Length: 98
Image (cartoon, rainbow, N blue to C red):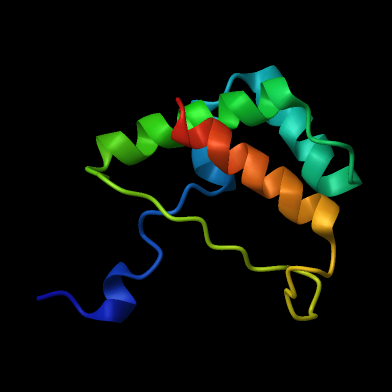
């Protein structure tokens, strides 16, 4: 049996995977969103959700979960930024309905 340290993080839809799977213009727009804080365009969000779903199904996924981990260094109280939480929920709904 594999050690946890050998398998942890091997199936991550990370930047490299997105670069391989998303159209170039979609990947560039997503980069602007994450690096420059630009608003997330629904067309970009849908493209990412579709690519992620396809990738996950190819990996044998039958279920998914959303894990919210803020990159701000503070706790993720759900009342901290309701606008962001709402947007994440909308994107999860889009992903679930693909």
